[in-house]
Length: 192
Image (cartoon, rainbow, N blue to C red; front, side):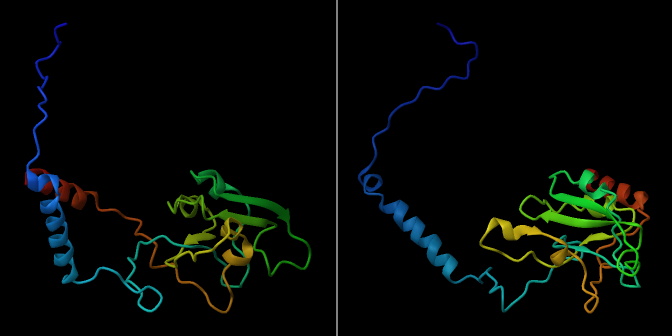
């Protein structure tokens, strides 16, 4: 049968030389690479003692913010859960009782708010969807655990502590985007 294209190759089984059969050149080449890397600067950082500088746009562990009076901002509208592409956020809404005005800003609040950190892809869509600016991704690294259940973060781990407020202004991006500057950069890349 004739082939449809002329791209066929004839494969010939070539005999290996003596040095190729004992793999000596391959072993020496590997040793040369290993020895070369012994004298290079190490890329490893000893993490708990030395912390790497994190970019200002890094998206890490979530936080549910409180307002200036200490009340929770979240009103359990569910927009963050709907916006989450990984479906990592679940919540249960409840009505505020009398006497809880200082705890919750609105009449409706999130009784249960959970984020499955194993499912979360840290995209930041939850904070973009929140109309009350209640949820933010911080620059903190999510700590490691040994059991899967420990990665389901409830309000006990997510709600901001009143004594140690978390500054999220570093993560906020400017509202105005200079499209003219972006188009000039793209034009320069294309012309090069």
